[in-house]
Image (cartoon, rainbow, N blue to C red; front, top):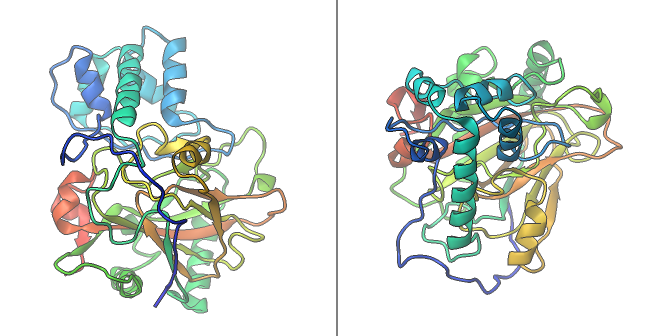
Length: 358
């Protein structure tokens, strides 16, 4: 059984919501369609990566669009992707739609929709969905990987991820890193440590979100280099998936993650929903949550090589770094959802996009 960290005692919450309706949040194409286009396309979630000094991605996009007011949304996204941010590939339909939309107009509409939704459905509203692990808590499973397995995976990272700023690798596209049988074993063992996991679910791995990632401390980065694997506070869910249950499994491959190497920090706030304003990389999320949940704090997790940390996809977290850290940290990251909710997760809509653990 894993160790469970519990948040501060429940605080009084405001219930600013419409009856029992589940909130749904606007995606990028929704706002783009509002800008006068009829194309019915589905959003693509940005893969968020940045150096510690970066701002939230939407703010950066809007700033870029303000400097190029005549550019289309597609042009803005392509320019954005040339920097330290990594944007997932757009479909042909999305590219055609975004090429016809003014980027500045679309992004301003998105900003307004974000702020409107955030005020109508605050993060401290009562939850409407039962979660597998409470937000703001985590389960620590010791020794999911043995020493030999962790060292083998770390050696593969040396070969493939040695350059600062290299994007994470998708495990299912690199079966030489970790085979499917071993990946399934790891996830099953992790789930056995989750207390009160509900019956009737089919735990399912999102293939595009099964990653191996190397993170460098600031001391190892040149000032001009972006680090595609350090992020501000964020949630692993997204606007479309919102509060449907999801778990993130984080497994460091070296010892002293959170000590001499970059680690993981969680905010112990029991948030109810995905935040459009703070959920996609926010340097001010801790302050904002502190105003909603008095006494909220950031919890720094220290883990050994091969340990598994399991937390809710709605839990705010970030890479923990300090000036004293001198070594990189490699980690496996795996997102787990219920098979019946996969159609609501961008990039997991098709059978071939997921691996169900029946």
